[in-house]
Image (tube, rainbow, N blue to C red; front, side, top):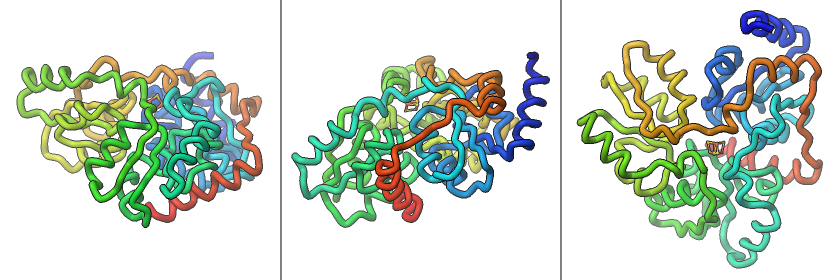
Length: 303
Ligand code: SF4
């Protein structure tokens, strides 16, 4: 089916089935354009919790669709491509976390939302890159076990020296690939142009950036800035929203490595098939779901 026809069919199906399409900022432009809401993990979690749709088509990776299911257990949550996963989320499982916790019995366990439902169920609270610092600062415990992203963990540790952050050694294979020498090269060529990076980048990159934030914080920073050019150090999918929202401004990607292949797996055809056949439904075990819900709910309350 040609693209325009697919778009029309998806719109029709959405209405017939009372469905909503949620898409992450890293999805391909065509998917972002048909979505009812495009955002980062925090915004998407809020939307999933608040919607009165019967079906949520989640254009993102597996852990995001799982979170949507946990927050809206009575809705049908569909992931158009079932093997769109997050390699970082897969770097720790519930058994590994249980062993990690045994070594630090008095620490609060904080998991980045980029984790499986089972890992969330073993955690005290969940965070996203937008609210991690605020939430960790607000916790009573001084000692924090943070999983799975060592780079976000080290960024929080640099901003909250009063806390002892013990991080799991996971990382995002996309952001971790950016080298600090790429910042040096860009500085040489682009002079004063601001460099904005995601805290999933490694500390040597984060240290040299002008601004560090989640995708929504980067979007907000740019909207309120008078600058006309920016260097973007997060996954390339965000450029679509930035260019749409800021027609007079120019954006350059910090590194060609900033592409997440899992986020690029979903096509319009996949969304159409998932919605038409109501296939690729996400299920979460009831006991895991109840425990994971508590850590997500605590996050939403505190953020
Ligand atoms: S960009 Fe990184 S953290 Fe996000 S889904 Fe891809 S691999 Fe996972």
